[in-house]
Structures are given as C-alpha cells and as structure tokens.
Amino acid sequence: MANEIKVGVLPWGQYTAWPPLLEVGRRADELGYDSLWTWDHLYPIQGDWRGPIFEGYLILAGWAGVTSRTTLGLMVGANTFRNPALTAKMATTLDHMSGGRAVLGIGGAWFEREHEAYGIDFGSGFGERLDWLDEAVEVMRAMLAGEEATARGPRYHAKHVRNDPPPVQAHLPILIGGDGEKKTLHTVAKYADAWNTGGDLDFVRHKDGVLRRWCEEVGRDQAEIERTLGLGLVVIRDDIAEARRVEATIRAHHPGYDEEGRLGSAAQIAESLAPYVQLGFRHIFFDSPAPFDEETLARFVDEVKPMLEASMAVASQ
Image (cartoon, rainbow, N blue to C red; front, side, top):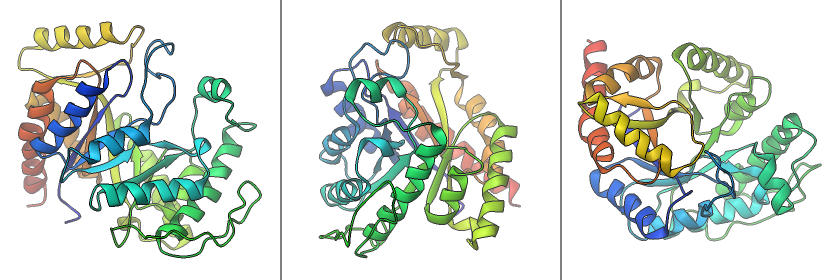
C-alpha cells in the first residue's frame, strides 16, 4: 500500500569488523525491518577518513545470505565508481542472490579524496557528475526493463548491451539520492522509483515541491515515486542521559564524528517524524554506526513504526 509506513536501517561499513556488521544485518531482518542499506564509499566519511571501511556491494551480498525479507540497497551507490551497465548487472545478480529483494541505489558521488586515492575520474565538478548520472540511469533503467540498452553518450559507450538473466523482480526499483534542483531532481522525475533526501522539514518540503514541478514538466505522476527520508544517527532511550552516554560511546569509536544525532524516547522520535510522514515520506531509515545499538534497533521498528502508523491513521480520519 502506498500509505504504509516502512522503516529501514543503514549500518555503517566503517570502523567495524565483518562479523558484527553481518550480524546487525541479520538482526535487522529478524526484527522485521523493511529495508537494509549501507554506504558506497572506499574511505570512511564520518570522522577520520584514515580508517577501515568495507566495500558496499559485497556487504549487500553478504547480507543477502543471512536475510530473507528486507530489501537490500546502497544509500546510495557512487555512479562514478562503476560503468552503469556493470552496475545494472551487479544489482541484477544481487536480486537473484536475495530472491528478489535488491534496490539499485545511485547518486552522483561527492567525496573527492577517495576518487583521487583510487584513481577514479571525479570530473570537472558536480554539474558534470550529475550529467553523467542522468546518462547512466537511462542505461540502467533500460537494462533492468529487459531492453538492449545503448548509451546516448558522450560519457558512456554501452552498445546494445543485454542483461541476461533479467532480475527476479518484474520491476527492480531504482532509488536516486540527492537534492540538486536543476539536474538531480529532474533525473529523479524521469527515471526513479524512489527518491532519498534528509534535513529539516522546511528543506525537505521545498525539495519535494521542486520534484513535483519536475514531474509535471516531464509528464510523470509524482505519486509513482516513493519518498524516503534519512535521519542520520538515532539513539532511543527513555533516559536522555543514558542516550547521551550511548551517543558518546559511538562517537568515540569514530574519531572526529561530530554530526548531530537524534536522541530521545520512542515517543519523542515518532513525534519529530510525524510531520514528514504527513508530507508523504512514508519510508524512513536511520544510521547505525558501530558499536551497533541493539536497543535502538529493536525499539525503532517495534515502537516508533507503530506510533507513526497510528498518527497517520488519526490524521486521515
């Protein structure tokens, strides 16, 4: 149903060993999460970049083997890292490995340091990378739909490329992350099944309005595009002092990490999210850095999700 609440979690692949990262994915599925995400970065992006991090698609492949219901995707894939035809093939393979649970998450990429270190072309600027993204998603969309895709150029050169076998899903969804009003949201309107953003309510409302205008211009029903909202770090505790202690432990594990978290009881978290739900953002996920917080993981799906469903039911009466 279009109005149902879905919740997800994004365990960070940085500053962790593989066994706990594998386990948090398995546990999220066991608890009933709708979606399971991770980053697509080659260096840590929170705190000190000179630390350990695992590669995104292989994290998803590992999770595919220990989960059975949650969708799996990158939030979001770096378009610059891979040829778009290869990306479509990888997402299709993940779809088979997971029994039809893959989401192809994609964005323009932004972290110049990792591109320079790995020798990956970063382009002349963000505008050029977004042009690359638009061209790439056109190829991906065609391949996932069973067409023999040919890139329009000038960046990519795929020619009549086949995607065989096709995905398990009749329509493997593409999620695009980003807020650029001139290019990214135009690409979302043309090709995406889902769009991800985050920020304060006024920011999100404005960006949603821009997307709606692009949908009108390209002749797309805006209701076809699922809205997803990323929250960053969430810590759920009834005692705010305890929540701050948990947050401090997480920050100490990621040296230099200083982005603001969302702390409070389940009721307080749900209350803060209700306006986004009313705006149409019915798929909400939060970040889970190591050391992974079992209490928040359990309470977000067990308590926050039902509260949001209840608030939406009351608002619709």
